[in-house]
View 1 (cartoon, rainbow over the protein chains, first blue to last red):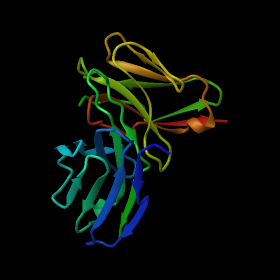
View 2 (cartoon, rainbow over the protein chains, first blue to last red):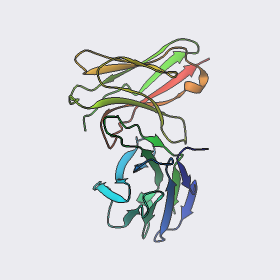
View 3 (cartoon, one colour):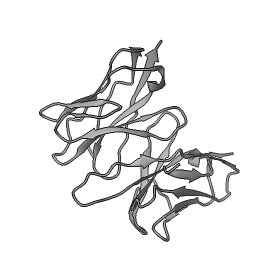
View 4 (cartoon, chains in turn purple, green):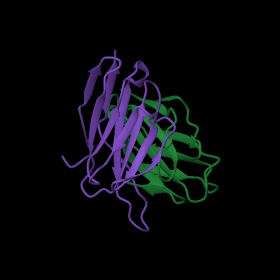
Length: 116
Length: 107
């Protein structure tokens, strides 16, 4: 499968614990996005990278959230001191930005987080 | 990013064409219209996008009005597997999803 992959697919944790999610984009895609989706709502943008550079962060991304893409390939999203309100589906998407072409984002299956 | 408006739900009979409307009256001149769908518990699936002209691919057709203030996604022969939430998005980089249209295909 050459699509976007995410790991783990499901995570249950206790309030106050730290969690880390991984996203592997489609090979050679230079842009990677993170979104969060709560029940009954559409996905909400969190942050995105072009290669290893983090270009934009939403105000939804509190200080407890950090994302990295150290080598411009896979990315990790860490949540420290989880709260019950962090329970959501965390989605990753990737695309390739080429001059003169319109980018299309392709999404992974998501990581569903439940904070007890 | 511009906001879009979609009906919350629609039904369509299996085998018929499903026509999903979207209003994007504040869309900017260089912003595209994207359509994604999401089947329960899966990540959003890209369907189609367009700027000004109508577009067609193997999944669907996209009809954009001349003033670009609205568009319609057409699934020509709906099947039960097309039951999903359909999102219409206008923008360029980060995607701003609304709550979409829940399309139910009726056998």
